[in-house]
Amino acid sequence: MLDKIITADIINQCRKNINEDPFSNVIRNSIIENGIDKTVLNHSSRVKNVFTFSHEIPTGKITNQEKSGRCWIFAALNTFRYYIAQKINVKDFELSQNYLLFWDKFEKSNYFLETIIETCHEPIDSRIIMWLLKNPIQDGGQWDMLSALVDKYGLVPKYVMPETFNSRNTMRMNHLLTLKLRASAFYLRQMADVQKASEEVLRSEKRHILEEIYSMLVSFLGIPPNHFDFEYRDDDNNYHEDRGLTPLMFYNYYLENKPSEYLSIINAPTADKPFMKTYTVQYLGNVFGGRPVTYLNVDIETLKKLVLVQLKEGEPVWFGCDVGQFSDRESGIMDTELFRYEDALGISFDLDKAGRLDYGESMLTHAMVFTGVHCVDDKPVRWKVENSWSEKSGEKGFFVMTNRWFKEYNYQVVIHKKYLSPELLEAAKQTPIVLKPWDPMGSLAIGCTY
Image (cartoon, rainbow, N blue to C red; front, side, top):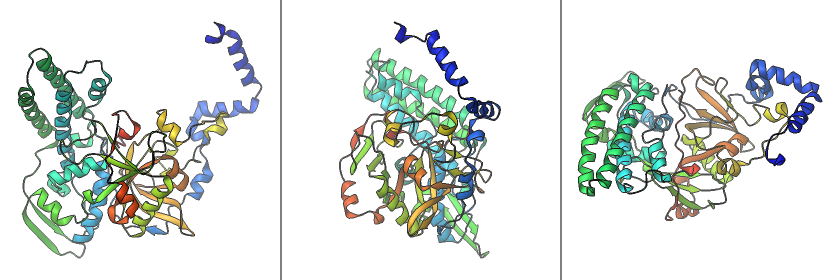
């Protein structure tokens, strides 16, 4: 029994260990007074991680997702605007993030309700139902979800559907939408279990629920436009107009590189996910019947080479990472040597990348854009990152990532098919292996700034 409980002997030994190391008390006092990050900050990391890069892509002004989890939308639109800005000769052009947020919330509502109808006879305490109910309308997303949205709804310039209080501060909106969706799930399940309602009847009721959701979204985000006039002055002060456009017309004409032409490539070195296989995640998506979320898993060196090729060709790269690991928001440095936690605490954290995924220590949390790289002897040393946390973070909004950090905490990149080898293209054609909804590769890029 004694080996199962904390005894006085164990506590006394712990106290003895502390007292035998007087130098550690100096570190402990600093941690207690200043916090561990300031105490263990490695200043040499700041010195070596300069914001100078051998290859850079010109970008517009840094964007700001504010108090929302729309990083995946911002990162995608930051890649799109690069191509549109070149086409129209307007460096600081920006697309409407609010427009896609509206349709994402509406489509996610339908997706959730459809999964509730599909699983209506599952026990309420089943793991799948608990998972579906946990967070039905969060801000996060994936590249393929973005692709499904723009293929269906198109794009609009930012001024056509500008930000609102609720697009910048999504917490209360999400709370009320979640409340409505959970109440609707309860009602639909009751109809199925008690009234023995058919799927046709359930979907008829779902349509009424969606009408209410649409009304809520209009109150929070405004009415998405059907038509608009595109008027602008280019950087040479020439006036242009393109009248009577629909969002799809604008998207199809002004964005030549369509998101469907890109593939999501991941590095998940866990035993259950062999490389050169494709994967999807059960119940992960937004547009029902739209493009499914799929990944091709490769080793980390292949992942890096693909990013390097696309950057050197002058194209930005959307990517997903675990931004909270060994990174500093103020300086914008992402470096595994930035904080010397193990040295200060006298312990070790013995988890590799696969272990961190398997044991819940790490997952994809934030999407950003690679816009540069610094190479020495044609090998990457550090990477330039365009973030969406305003110019107040990092170096006027840009971050710098070391090559080691890339290896340990970068999980996904999106690469144009033209940069993939025949072998990779062939591997991407495989029927995806279906992962459980709670698999770490089912995580969504949210990068929330609450």
